[in-house]
Image 1 (cartoon, rainbow, N blue to C red):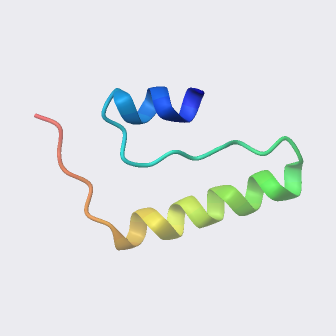
Image 2 (image 1 turned 120 degrees about the horizontal axis):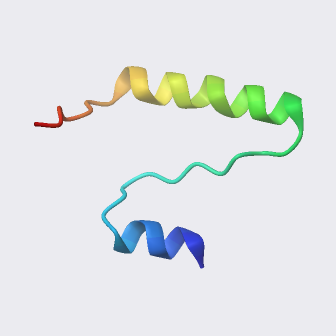
Amino acid sequence: MEIHRCYDLGANVYVAKPMEYEKFVNAIQQLGLFLSVVTVPEVS
């Protein structure tokens, strides 16, 4: 399954892209909220 492959490659978050516009907009808003409360390490 794609999710397992992402985690095997080192991902710690997986976001599925909804096909319906309203659900997509909601998912992007939720992603923005998530990113505002977590610490994302800098890439060097």
